[in-house]
Amino acid sequence: MTELPPYHFTTSEINFLAEQESITILPRYTFNGTRLIGPRLPNLKALHRQQVPVWIALILKKQDRCNVVIPDWLSVSFLKQRYDEEVNQPNNFSELPWHWLPIAKMLLEKCSDDFIDATHEVRSTLQDLREIRQLKARKGIKELNEVYLQLDGLSLMEINEIRPFIIESMNQLRILSQSVKGNGQFTGIEEAAEKEDVSGLLDESEVGDYTRDSTRDSIARDTATTDSVARDSIRGSGVRSRKPDTSYGDTRDENDDEDSDVEYKKS
Amino acid sequence: MELPMWLADILAVCAAQNDDGIDNAEENAETQAFIRLIEPEFFSKQFLNFIKSDTLKVNLAPFAYYYKIVAKWSYMFNDTELVELISKMFVARASEINGLSYKLNDQFSGDNQEFLNGLENFEKRLFKMSHLSYKDMNNWIAKG
Image (cartoon, rainbow over all chains, first blue to last red):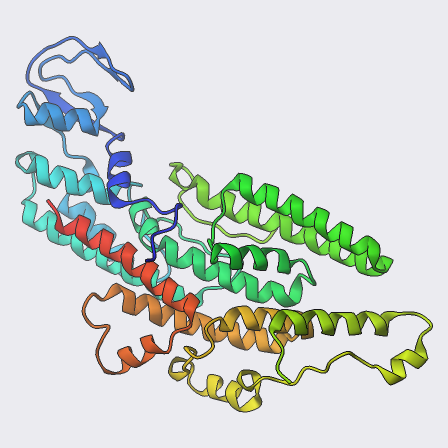
């Protein structure tokens, strides 16, 4: 049975990550802050705005100890504006928070009474926004190539959704195109791929080891053959060994806030 | 004669090395290569034309590892044209696969069924993975 590859997040994992984002709350009571394992819970003063992680806000909300200040971007007018942007720019994604989907979902579920706009309107606008963005992302798949993909403005949840598909496809395209360009050393990865049943993304360390192995291999083999061939394939292996590192490295960094695009650049 | 791919690969390479050798013109003349590879059916002009005309109708199921074979073949013959064509075909098919894996109930009707049955092994895996991912997402949105 096929399972999702290890680089894929499940939706609940992303939801968990989103809960670490901070949000403004309006406490109803005053109580002293305390030290938690992760973040510090700041001193809360009644009716003084305070930034806390989303998960704390939701717990306090559940106990009726605070009101959540709904972020600016979660208003109907803001979302409508973004929607219009999406319509007007067919090739770009509009700027939205990195975790807009899970945060919007959580807030809508747990503190719908704090919303200023009608929640059903917010919901439907969010739905529209998501659909148009998804449509765009899937349209982009028709232009897939083996070296480069830019997904500016897509949030983690949206990237994650198409990630297995994109990574596997681009890997396949890379194998195909390198079979002629790389002049030789692709076979290494090919064989590994056969063993692993194209495991697609190897761990960084594995990739490292692996490239080293195959380089050694190729050198050993080449000493037996003529000089020119040896030079060729060493150059070939150089080209290839740099490639997996960069591309996989980039995808790994995705959960970094500033680096919100997946990039596959040819080095 | 039919040989397994790995054997044909080695024999063809050996022969190539003989050609590269410096002073063995005689040997060259008599044994140009251990073997000569005959184009398999799925790389024939006819088949490639078929691919060009309608990428989605091509049935790759009989050739379970088509893309791997293409990679090996083009490695041996440095066939850029073939790779370009196959890459194009793959992109077209992949985007169709993606589209189908997104829809939850439309997959098994008419043409779609036919297309899915004609998938190569790698494409099948791609379809399943993509489908799982979309399903996870849809479940998450519906939940709550």
